[in-house]
Amino acid sequence: MDLNDGPEYQAFREEVRTFLAEHADVAPPAGSPRDKKARAWQRLLLQRGYTARTIPREYGGAGLPADLLKSRILAEEFARARVSPGLGGQGISMLVPTLLELGSDAQKRQFIPPTLAGEITWCQGYSEPGAGSDLASLRTSAVLDGDTWVINGQKIWTSTALTADWMFCLVRTEPDAPKHRGISFLLFRMDTPGIEVRPLVDMTMKANFNEVFFTDVRVPAHQIVSRRGDGWRVANVILGNERDSLADPNVTQARLNGLIEVMKSETVDGTRVIDDPVFLDRLMRIQGRAMAMQYNDLRVLSSKLNPGQDADLARLIVKLQGTELRHELEALAIDAMGERGLSFGSNPYLRDNGTWQHFYMYYLGLIIGGGTNQIQKNIIGERGLGLPREPSAKGA
Image (cartoon, rainbow, N blue to C red; front, side):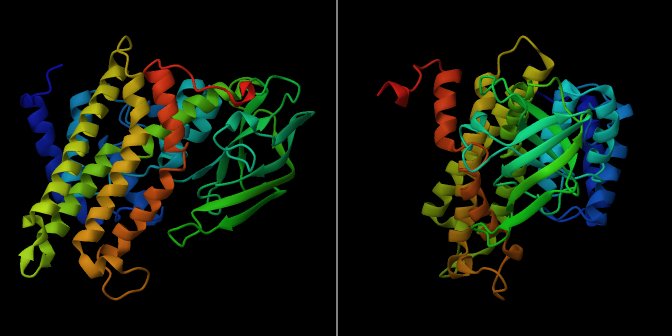
């Protein structure tokens, strides 16, 4: 594949740069909540075709043909300008592509446009106290009562449950079926009677996670994605999209650009940190890994345009390598700030609103969340490299 810019792509790059120069001041800061400013920015990006590019117009996207080079140009220029590329999160990054693949036409029309616009936010009801890495052991039940599912059970580590409008949730509908075959995938509003959310404070000192309890929660029967008992297949599509989104290499590149600015401005004994050979060596190692993740992302993107191309292994490493890389990147910024790097909360010496400290702790958590990296190594070894499966404890 020729990745050199021709005249068409050079013109597109200039168009994007001009847009960013003219509108960057109205973009929301990275990590901002989905407030009016963030939604207005999302609408502008949708109108320009700078996000949701290939999603059909009838579902709220730009309806443009897939173009690998234009996607790369957008990623590069937004990262270079350190400007938000638009809304993400569990609804846009995970549920939307899953509904495009497996949802009914009515579900696509109902949920995709408002999700892309930031009018509906989502949380994911997967993990349970006894079903984390072994997700198929989940016990939250859904019993069909006429045209309504009645849900009872509990979920845990549910990100954004306190603020989400809707949940996509795995429930057990066939208790007598083998554990992978008795699961269904439901969609329901978070203000449905019988749902209780309890916040869990994590290492960032914020309630990013929650427990969610269901007591006779009644959900319309048609709010099931795919067939009854087919939830495990839907779950695997979601998990693939989740692993791709947990450590976006384009966001990593934007953070790397910010890290370089920190190292240029911070000094030790009058010398810029970036000129210190030890710090510079750490930066170059991180920069090399960030470049490798960018090229790996190109492999994943190109496979979507070439169905015969095998990129399974390339997709499997994204979450493992990406989360560990982000944790090390944020750590280097903290080290480069010296004593100021220890600031937290309302400390007056805090730099960049504390984002470096926040994401250092956040990505330490993500190394565990979304499937622990230890489990991910097993998956890569067994499914990606064809290594022998880990011995079963039952045979011991």
